[in-house]
Amino acid sequence: MMRSFATLARTLNLSAAVRELGSTRQTVRRHIALLEEFKGAPLFDLEDRQYSLTQMGRDSLGEANTLLARGEAWLHNETSERAGLFRLAVQDGPVPYLLQQHPLSEIWRSSSPLIRWGFHIWAGAEGRIESDAFAPLRPYLMVFRPNEDGWVCTEVGEQSSFATWFGWKWERSSVGRGIADLPGGEGFARLLTEPFRMVQADQGVRLDHIFTKVRRTPEAELEAISYHRLALGCRFPDGSFALATLVDRTQKVLIDDLPEELRTSMPEAMVMDITPPK
Image 1 (tube, one colour):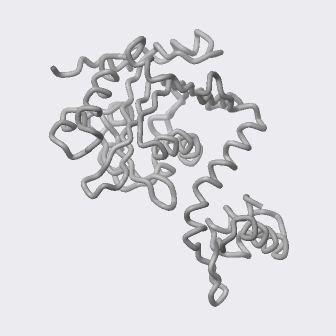
Image 2: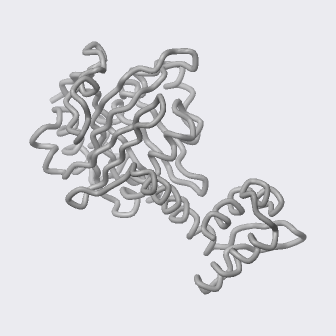
């Protein structure tokens, strides 16, 4: 039922949703009717055979997509929790993606000076992304804004991990794109959804250690990359939510079950090793 809702919400076309689901019109309509009965409110408006989401539908879609993604990952033994913290391990296929969430106390124990400095700056600026106190950190950040379709990039710092890994072309051309249109495509966009939504929900901070492989250009070979990522809940001047990510490439990732040969497989030349300004 939830998949029928999410598919119809994305296509807003019953025939297209039926084809994608391999179902029937009657089944999809029945699924939507049952969900609306459970939710106690309509999820769609239908006028002249054209579907549109109601406010209840818009409010429900993000969580539905997250639950579907988490359910699929759980069935494939890709997600788990350890001490209440999220772990993700996608290892089938050519692109592994291993993520382990860490308690914020790990910032002081094992994180780099860049991550520690970024946390201090965020706290001092009270999350106000346009404040003078936040300005020294912005060259190292990527900033995203949520919308109904996911997350849109609004800023790429010239000294950020994204800019120094993919180069100036992507740095200049990424602003305004959804995360599915950035390098990595829909696969990486799906993997970012859960951590980003968690930060949006509590308006706080999250620390993840990540290992994966990424192509710098569509024609390039996959390259190992490992990093610490601090996701920061921030505010734009109008008070709307902004999510800033501070990434520090390092070989010192702490991920359970990550083999040592992978942990150190990113070339040392790609370690960022940044000393923050005083």
